[in-house]
Image (tube, rainbow, N blue to C red; front, side, top):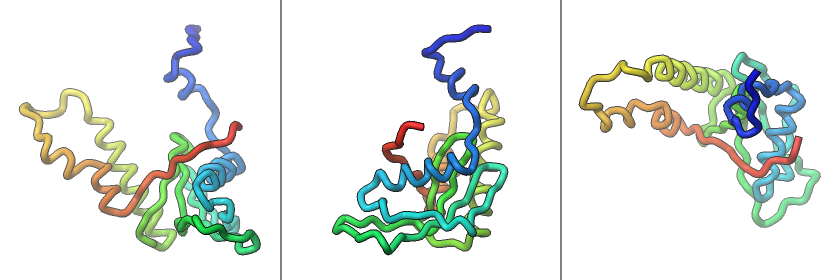
Length: 153
């Protein structure tokens, strides 16, 4: 079998998918790496697992003193177990609505990925492409990605 240490595709396709414990650690590491994020905790009783990953409800641990650069924490986040993408929403939704909107974006993204090759007409309608893109829809819905420094796992 072909192996290349610099083959990032092989590395990303061969790694194990996250389990819930690792997912929680990843969420907290990303959120806590932001200024003032050390007060964030996950409300275990409200965690929901779906085919795409987990929806975590967040709360602020008031037993830890706040600092002056405290960040506003999202009400809930989604961690995609396939891509390790952490997503939040600037608009507060019920948990069911948050999941429904995310699943709708995933379905749209997957539909576009299936028809990417040789399925367009020329000249390509670039102006319309952005308006109907998954990124634009996500932005309009209030979704945003949370990055950050991660701890070594």
